[in-house]
Image 1 (cartoon, rainbow, N blue to C red):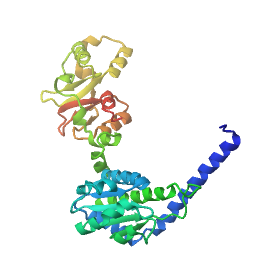
Image 2: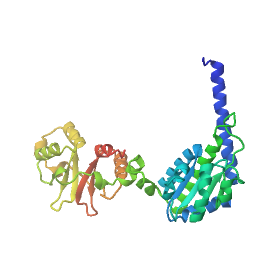
Image 3: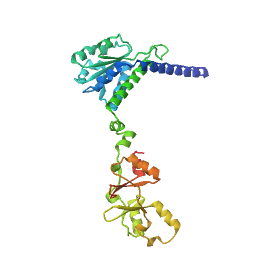
Length: 328
């Protein structure tokens, strides 16, 4: 089949029309959120167990995503397939749980078959359906209206706008619950430790810093040549000048060395105290690693020292350390 310019224009037109239908469905959905939505949020918030999301077909695919979104935003949730639930998996739903049941028609045989059992177990059911007079709505404790005027499918057969409405309504529930729980970015990071946000909000300087023998330490009277040997051995691009109690007195960097060479003179006669920069920038061990990265960027440096409140040297963290940990 050839795909000429006419076909291309038609494809674009069909795509735009589908998006317009789905956008209109969401626009019309928002004003219909009412006390039922608030009761659904209250029911899930009071849940002592988990929110068991159920749905068949495309509603089931949407339900899996809703369950995942709820779980990642502070509301324990799982997806239970209605057909499997009728053959033993209903045991996954226990007292203290809440069921969120999705069905656009509200007449899914597999879902409706287990509703009486849920009722006998005393498990609250929140229904998300496009038909308020459906069997699902009749059995539910709370009914959320997800009806759409039309599907984006020109045949009005494939679930399109209706599943978009379900997905958006599920997101609305997750966001409202997130807010009600006081869920914060730090909480989100704890459930996403492998993601970039998790690394930024959970990784502290103490987790990445170099310490003990890995630190290039010298004292104020250390000769310049000996300080250079210490810098080369530890390969951190600097040497830290400390006093007898290991408090930071200054720092000498590769950049300082280049500037001294440009000035000329006999460097061998100098001591560490004579060439070090006093009061270097430092960070605490409990600071977030991303804060250390921000400090390096602002100061245009590649290593920052880690000290306690009395300026005792605890460690050092470099831009390379942060990059290896994928903090930046």
